[in-house]
Length: 168
Image (cartoon, rainbow, N blue to C red; front, side, top):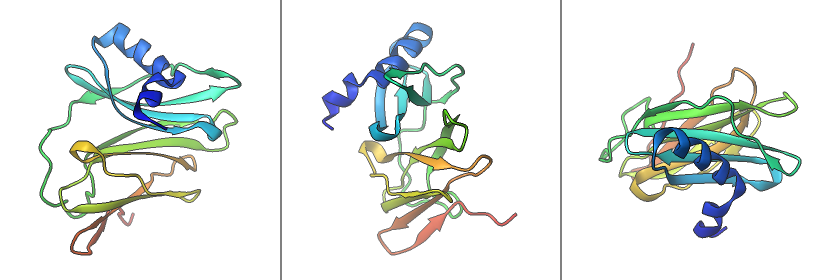
């Protein structure tokens, strides 16, 4: 899907109308559109905040999320390399229950270091490989079990694999 088509997607329009009304000028920084699944993740920046939002479709209608959280804008400087146990800098996300309640949609966003060559986001339900965008932006939307946190693994140029896995 071309970037101009992404900007025109009805789910993104839902997000932008809600944020612009409450927080000024909104800019879409990235999106993952899973049209066949009826789910979209969008990263939006305003002058002072970052929003990560999951929007779901019911029938032909994209549902406005009832509760939206924001965080501070990330530091624009990318790290040379990721730190162990923190594969993506400034990682955050959003979670929405699927319409049938059988799983949750989990959006993962963060900034890959300069030496990152690939990223994997893994849950017990699926594994996805998001691209590394401009400025190191990584965004993915995965299905997960309730209470599950996706495992993020970054592979670096020198072959290291760093993940945010922690034994409990």
